[in-house]
Length: 109
Image 1 (spheres, rainbow, N blue to C red):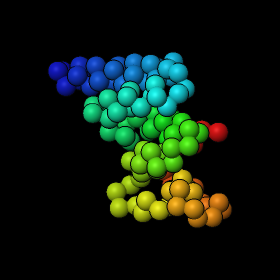
Image 2 (image 1 turned 45 degrees about the horizontal axis):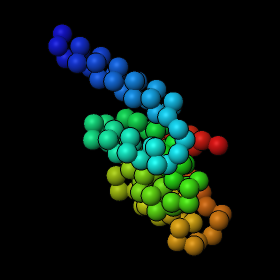
Image 3 (image 1 turned 90 degrees about the vertical axis):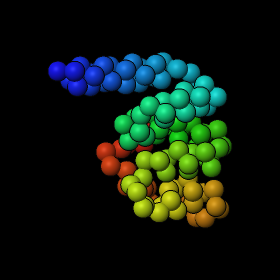
């Protein structure tokens, strides 16, 4: 009974945080402190949509290293970080790269 109530409360908090981020300004400087705070409470895979959006904001701001670091948190353990297209762009490699395999993720357009 207590565990079910705690799970419901955690889910309500996750939904509230997701809604707050959706209503937040689409600027990197607004998102960065929020995403870092959320990372203390939730694993990146529990908030995949937010990390993908944050990675997109980083990329659009020209912060490719921060984008790479953010998106790498969504990769399965042991997956090569060099498979991320943004990593290859940051290293100056070719622009024809394959998208990484993120389970259940769709990158925003």
